[in-house]
Length: 293
Length: 293
Image 1: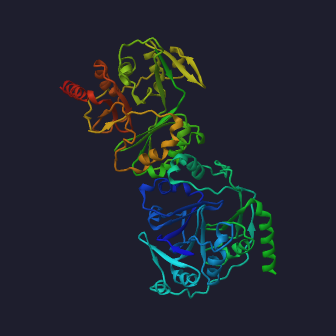
Image 2: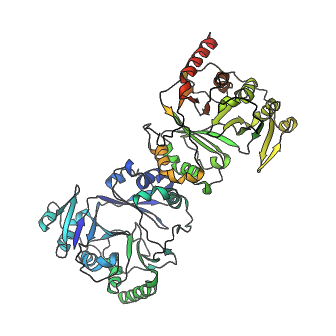
Image 3: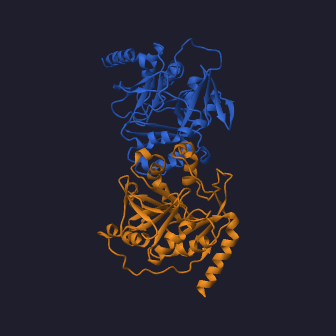
C-alpha cells in the first residue's frame, strides 16, 4: 500500500458559535467561491460547542484574528492511504477501520498524536510537521511513502524524512480512558460533485449559517446507510494526547465494523453504521470497564 | 389609473464599501433566505461610493448599528401606479417616463421629495410618511388611490389621508441644476423568478460581496436591450431637495424615451436606452445651459 504525504500545510482552528456571523464573509468565499481563493484544503465541522475549521495556509490568511478565533499552534500535514489494487485485506469495512492496524496503532505506539478527518471517499490522517520524521520511520515498513510536491509524488526514504526534521523525543501522555456519549441522532454521509455545489448553495448556507437551533439537517435523505455517532471525551481532549483514535478504531477493526472518524477542536467523533451501534456500545462499555479496573 | 400606497414602512440606509463584509450575514439572509425573515421589501444598489439598502422595518432589525451603517431618519412608503387596462397614454415608453407627468411633476410642484426605485416590472415612488396627506391630495385628481392594508386595498379619500397626518407646510428648497455624469458602461436590466434565485446564488454572492474591483458583472448577457446610465449629482444630493427626478424625467417624457430611475443614498441614476444616449446627452446639456443662464 502507498501512503502519501499531501502538499498542504494545515492549521487547525475553532470559531465560537457567537463568532460565526463575523466570519460569514471569508467562510462563504472558502466554501463556495473556489476561484476567489488559493485555498486547496478546507474542512468545516459544526458541533454543539463550536465550529472546527481546518484549512491550508492560503485559506488561513482569510480568517482575521479575533476573540472568537482559536488557533492550534502547529502546522499539520495530511496523510492519505492509497490502496493500489492488490487488496491486502479481505475487509469490507470502510473508513478508519481499514487503517486502524497499519497506521493508527503504530503511530499511537510512537506517541504521535493524530487529528483525523474522514470523508466519504477517503480518510485524512493529520500529523504535526515536527512529527513527520517519526511518522515516516514508523510507517516505512508497511508502506511505500510518497511526498506530494508541486503536483509530483516523490518517494520518501528514511533519510529524506529526517533531513532537517528533529526526532520526536518529547514524552507525550498516553491515552486515558475517555467517557463516550452516544446521542440518538442519525447521520447521513454524503459526497458532492463540486459542479453541483452551486445548486444547493442556498440550502447549505441556510444550514451552516442560519440554523442555530440544531434543526433537522437531513434535507437530502438518501436511500443510503444511516450512521450513529460516538463522541469521545467528557472534557475537551486537547491536541497532545495520543492513542485516542487507536483506542476506538482498534476494537472496531477487530470486529470489522466500518467507521468514519472526525476530530474537532474539542472532541473526537466516530460514526458507525446504525445496525452496529448496539454492539459498538457494548464493546466500548466493556473496554471502559477493563481499562479502568 | 390606480395608485397604490403599499403596506411597507421603509427605511433608507447606506453601508460603506469597507463595512460590507460585516453585513454579509444579514444581507445574505435578506436576499437569499426569504423563509428566515419577515422582510417583504428589500432593495440593494451598489455604486462606487457605497451600498444603498432600502428595506422594511422587519428587515431593518437585521442590520446592527455600526459606524459603517448610515440611516436616513424618515419612514418612507412606496407608491405604485397600476394602469388598469384602459390605456390612457399612447406612449410605448416604459419606466418613469410613463409617470413623469402624472406623478413626478405634480409631487415636485408640491415640494414633496421622492426616492425612486425602478424595477424591471414596475416603478416604486417612495415618499415620506409625513408627506402622505399632501401626496394623496395632490394625486387624487388624476388617480384612484388605494391603501394596502393587511392584504386588502382600501380606497383613500382626501379626508382619510389627512386624518392624523399633518400638512406639509415646511419650505423645501427646489431642485438646483445638478451636473450629470454619463459613464461608458452598458447595463442590462433583468428580472428573476424567485424560484430561480437559488440556481444563481453563488454567482450573485460572488458579484455582490467579492468583486470589489468593479469587474464585468454582465454574466447573463441577454439578447435584450442595453442601457446607459446618467448619474445625477456632482455632490451627494441628500434627501430634502425635491424636483430632481422631475427635472430629468420631464424632458424624457416629452421625447417619449424610456427610462428606469434608481435613487441611492448619495446620487440619483437614470438608465436610458443605448440608442437614445446621444439625444439624451444633448437634451441634458441644453437643459443645463438654459437653467444656469
